[in-house]
Length: 180
Image 1 (cartoon, rainbow, N blue to C red):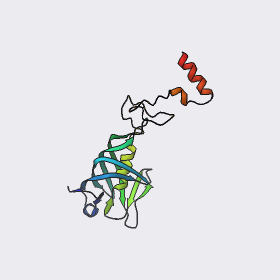
Image 2: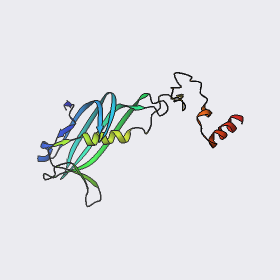
Image 3: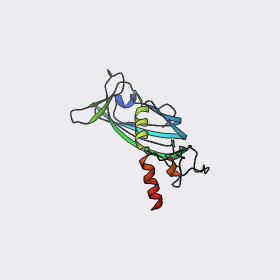
Image 4: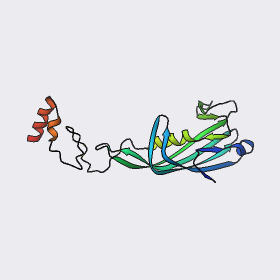
C-alpha cells in the first residue's frame, strides 16, 4: 500500500479480475468539502479498500484528523478530533463522465463511476464533515464574549453587567431574576 497526497485509487486491476485493492494517504492543511474549507491541525490520514463483488464494488474507508473550529462562546480556534468511517456501493459504467449517485432496482444507493482512477475526495470530505461535531467549546468554563463591547471575558473583565445588554421588556425580566 502506498501513501499518497492525491485522494484517489486505481481500480484497473480489479475491473479485469475479482479481488480487492487498497490505498492510504494524508491530507495537509484543509479538507475541501464542496464550497466549505475545513482547516486541519496537522494532517488527516485516510485509508480505503475496494473489493469486487460481481459487477459491483464495495468501497470502505476511514479518515482521521483534527479540524479547527470556532468556540461557540468566544470564537477562539478550537481543535476537535474527527474519526469518520464510510462504506459505499459502486458500479463501473465506462460511459459515465463523473461520479453519479443513482438508486438501483433494490432501492440501494449506488455510485456510478467511469474511470479506473476513482477520485476519493468526495467520499472522504463527506464522511469527515458528517462526523464533525455541530459546535465546539474551547473549555467548559469558557465565559464567551461580552454582548456589549465584544471583549473576550476569559481574558479581561470589561466591567459590563450581563443584564445591561438586554434591551426592552427582557431587561425588566433580568432585573427581576437578579432580585430572586
